[in-house]
Length: 220
Length: 220
Image (cartoon, rainbow over all chains, first blue to last red; front, side, top):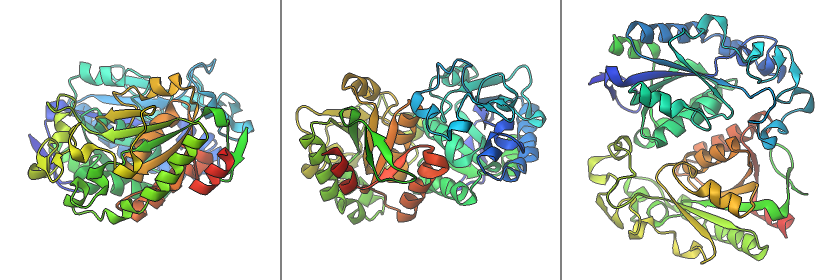
C-alpha cells in the first residue's frame, strides 16, 4: 500500500490496482471553434490543462497502469440519445445538428474525437458514453474489472459535470476515487472549486483530491 | 403541457407523467441524536424543511401523482455495502456499527426509517438504496416505468450528495428533472446553493429548479 498526500487526508492505494479515467478530453469541448466554444464558453481554460493531463497519462503508461478514456457522443441515428437530452439545447446547436466540427456529439465526427495531444494508444480502452456519467449504458465497469482495477484516479472535463457524475457513480460501485485537481477543469472556476469541496467533505464522502506530481511521485 | 416558473427557464411537464422522488428523509440524517448529528452536523437545517416536504408530498397525493421514497441503507449482513464505503468513516461510526438509533444505515433499524411526519402510504414505492444514487442497484427505474412517469420532481436530503447524484442519474436516463429548492437541504448551505447553480447551468444541463408553491400551483 502506497500513500499520497491528498484532501481531506492521505489517499492510500495499491499501485497494481490503480487505474486512470480521463473524461471527455474531446475536440468539441476543448478546441476553439468547437461545440463548447459555440455555446459561449471560454475553452482556453480547458486547453490549459492538456499538457498536465498528458503528463499524467504518460506517468500511468510508464508505470504500466491502465488508462481508460471516455467520450460523450451518440450513435449517428441518435437511438441512444433520450429526447429529453436532445431537446434541451438551442435548436440550432442540438445534438446531431451540423456544427463547426461535424455533427454535434456524434461518434465518428471530428468534434467527438479526443484532442490530438492525448490520443489513446492501441491497448487502451475508449468508452463512448451517452450520458454525463461513464458507467451508465457502457462497458466501463466490466472493463475495470477485466483490468483488475479497484481504485481510480480521475482527470478530464468538465469537473462538475461529467467528471463529478462519473466519480459519484464509481464511488457508489465501491471504488476508492481520487480526483487530480490540476488535470481537471471547468468552464466555471467556481463550480470546479465547489465540486472538489463537496466531494471531499465529510471524510471523503465521494473521494479524495490530489495533484499530478504528487500522484505520479507515489506511483513511480 | 403545463409550465411552471423555474430556473434557468420555465419547466414544462405533462401532469399525468410527473412523479415526485423524496430522497432519504430518514431519522438518522434528520433527527437530533441520529447518525448525521453524531458526525457533527447541524440537523436543525434539515429538520426545518420537513413541513415543506410534507406539503409537497400531500400536493402530489391530492393530484393523484405518484411519490417515490428512497432510503440509504444496507442489508444487516452488509453484503451490499462495498468495503470502500464501510471503511471510509470513523471506525466507531462505521456502517453497521451500533449507533444512537440502532445499527448505522442498516435496513429495519430505527435510524433508517423515514421521519414520522413523512411516512409513505401503503400505495407508495419505497426504494432502499446502497449508494448515494437512487438508480444504482435498485428497482427505481423499473418502478418509474411501471407508473408511467417521464418527468421527475426532486426533494429530500442532502442536496449535493444523494439528491444531486440521483438527479444526475435520472438526467442521463432521459428524465426531465426539476429540483424543488425549498424542499431540499444540506448540512452545508454553500453546497446546496452551488449544487443548484451547477445543475441548472448551461441551459439546464442536469435540470431545473423551482419551489413548492409554484409546482403545486401548476399541478393542481
